[in-house]
Length: 339
Image (cartoon, rainbow, N blue to C red):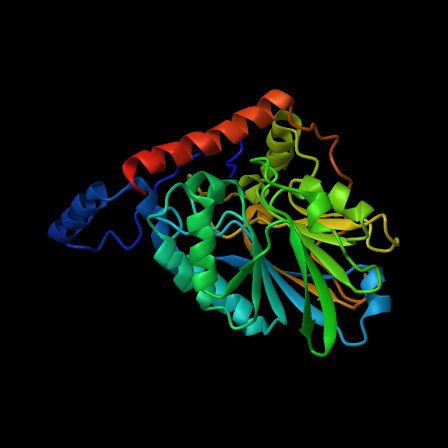
């Protein structure tokens, strides 16, 4: 969703060298000018960080056998993020052999043009996949995105929870529809939730974790921010925290050693981008995160310690109304165009 407050642009033409014949270099330059500037980023090999964390202590007491959850978010299948990057992320996840994959929203960018590609991407995961929608999915047409995901084998959780059995262990997965566009309903999602089973929550917007913890969900996985995409000098916290009003920008927040109603939330940096695929800073890199449920925090080295949340600022009633209107306007335009 975010690229701080401004787009930084640094085009790079890969593959040329000073030893190339003049005609060859001219041909390369002519071809480069015919491409979208975004395509110039596509030639760099994808770099995707693999980060690993233990689950909350509550899961350690509830699980006999540990479970591995792979968290992916904000894949934004479309022209901005090359399919090579998408499939590299899938391959990285599959190589870890997780028990389940969860994807926390923004499957597409701005349209329905790449829904077949989305189906291809999510169908390539070997483990069961569960997901929730994000704001871009609603802007692009939630019903159509849901159908594309279900064709690829993803179970979409729209303000509901489900119980799955993995390695002989039962796990409750709570899924919230997108809160940014006003579609989240926590009360509906947790209705009938059992306190005796290990539980994780999925939400595109991390701030919904504050409410899910109250219902006994000790770990919430989220996305939306892309970590700001520029994390040098903590510019992402300045832009997304003070200016936009997020409490949680990237990484792990909260408490894993305390029983409910306290808990933790993890905000993934994402795989794709909706505008410019530029990422600067170690924390801004594309990311796949593994959560080892059943292991005590501190049992193995983790990427970083839990962080204190920022003060945050909830959206105003006017902002909420504007966001809902934006979804309705985009849907009306699609209806008029017959899409």
